[in-house]
Image (cartoon, rainbow, N blue to C red; front, side, top):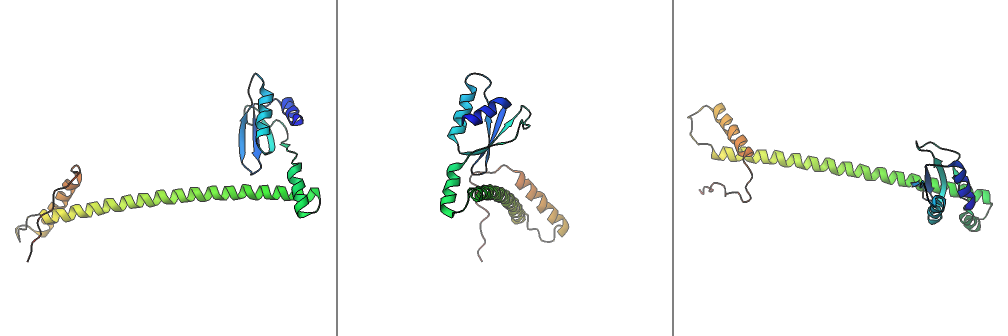
Length: 185
């Protein structure tokens, strides 16, 4: 670990970008004063990282990425699968890439589901508004005077529409009054 800290000290980064073993990338701030290098070492020792990139204040690389010596994981793969250390390192890289791609696919699926739910909610909202308007027109029709032949049909429809618009613009009542009594007959 001290070799890694020595490399980081020489580059004098403003921040670090640490790639974790599961493929996620985490930013790490480099303190300006105090025991800054021991704090950086403490952070790097507490996580299972694969690469560390030293960045300047603008986010540009200051040098090549520092790769972790992952001898433990490589040895486990060599023991399990047999073969060489080089092959085990290739297998580890493939597994890390696969994990990263799986995470990216999962994130894309979650975003797609969230967009779908938003669209469905908006559609339901619109549908309920259309239904409310239809009920207002029906209520206006029931409240319209039943003067047979008194007015031409076009004017009666216009009056019903005006009444429906007035009813829709009225404030909502917590417990609406009952509708007109049903005619039995």
